[in-house]
Image (cartoon, rainbow, N blue to C red):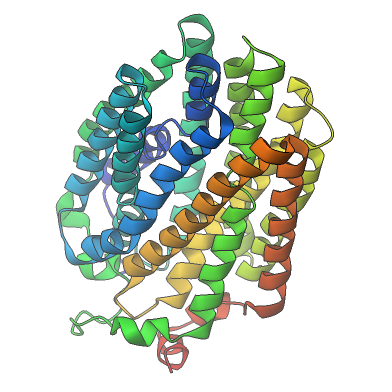
Length: 413
């Protein structure tokens, strides 16, 4: 099956989906904190709860979303419908910026966003096969970061010259466009058995979930993902609040500059990770670089509130996030080879991301409220350092597990 080549139309459609969904799948992200702080004058604790609401709901829906993607052939419809739900949620936030309405909309955004990453990864694997998957994931992430770059430029201009609410309308426009573009991908070219990580077409039943959950390497990887995002998720929203407090009026533009700078780096990093993987560099080595960057970034944020310095520090996020976006999917693919549970594992990974992001936003918001931004950034830096040590000491290399079909069965023992 890996020898079948998808059409150029389907591959172009996949490229376009990664560009458009870059702005849709995360909603308005850190711009929500700027909107609520600078435009609606919410306090940091309430903003932390609002940011966490999306993460909590996304966490609850991650595993069901993975199982849904594994079990359905309507993957294109899932991508389109989820994007449109996020667009509706963004409209609700900007039209009704009250606490309960924002929490409800954030919950809807979290539920919809749980479906998009595993669905795109499944379509990618189903189209190109395992042999070309490393390169495809790297390409997906490069286009994704290019889409984030485009969205950040537009959001910065709209937020500065027309108002914060136009950032939300931008997400809605991207959502509608993505629902149309997904039709470029030909459904007949998606191998759905291959898309869920199956290797043997004659083997219809995936490996039982309880057998997967007993695996030590999978549990260590998921715990590492929690710690990665616990130490990372709240940093940019906190930096946005610092800018909103110290440089009112220029905060949206400065936050967009942060995101633009990071996305420039992410595009190159995603490509470089694909090249490094093709040359035999291990997943663990690459992931350690991403984890080592986080504590450094947290400490640097405590030293300045200059918009220019904050933008410079945010380049480190480009390194960490660029690596994570590629390597995390590859590790999940390595661990799930031959099990038929690739998207379930992605659901577990995304659940771990949600748990980490929830802990990060919910706890850091109150640390900042009680002790200040400097303590908040140091708190996240310590968490990130613990994650680095945990991963370095306990996580095995997974790349060799993808060396051949026979590697899957010993890994499940």
